[in-house]
Amino acid sequence: MIETASLLAVLHGDKKILLTGHSDPDGDCLGAIAGLFFLLQGKSVRVTGVIEGPVPDRLSFLLPQEINVIEGDEQKLPEVEADLAIVVDSGELKRLGRVEQIVKGLEVINIDHHPDNEYFGDINLVDENASSACEILGLILQDKIHLPPRVMEAWAAGILYDTGGLRHPNTRKETLALLASWMGTGMKLHLIQEKLFGRQTRDSFALFQKALGDLRFGRGGQIAWTVIKEEKGGPSPREVTQKVIDEIRGIAGVEVAILFVDQGAGTKVSFRSSNFPVNDIAARWGGGGHVRAAGANLEKPFAEVYSEILTAVEEKMDEWNY
Image (cartoon, rainbow, N blue to C red; front, side):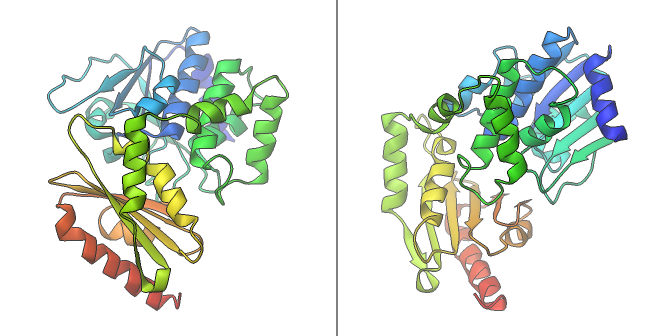
């Protein structure tokens, strides 16, 4: 593929590279950036990483200390000298937050797995069948270039994160074969699993408990939802978001799980389902994602939006005869 050749040329070239991904990054985004950073750094490519936070504490182990994390509108954007930007795990440039200002005007390689990707790059490595951006990178490069252990570990972490520890439907045979090949080099997958999912602070666990304690059901138990209130100085909801919504979706009879994050003036909403398409619902509020995993950011308080969203889900389920 021409696109693959272009990516390899970057890894062996003399361009100055900017690495970035979507704001409020998750494990796949951070893992993809980290692996690319280590790979480029090892080849003496001039590389700068910039991402808009916050970065959850439990995922901070993924982030190389050299990556610039932008926190809040008051923080000045770093001055970056770059010819080309590699953007990972983002369906559109606006998802980069303030970092979009740095990317504008640069040549862009877009590496993503979301079906609603806008193909905004000069080179687009987009595969909606892949479990993650990390899987795309691994499949493209595994037989083309030597991957140091920490590159494989970073990308394995991103794959594990986006597949929920290989439990989600996006886990496919290519996913398992890729991880198996890396394990064949000595990579300890269970240790990465432990870092991602095996530990959390007491405050985060209390947030998790409260979210499940506030769980509500609708439509005869087919819809389940809860809300987490974001508190200044408290644990980040991102610390428990995936765990909460996966637990809800795992309840017998639940087809659609919804998690609201009450941010005061705004609301984040995440959707997960077993079979029902939720990306169309997220798109109504300017969001998107995958068919069974999607989300949106709303500039309205939780009290003004939750009933409207629940009604939209119920109406869509009626339409689909669920």
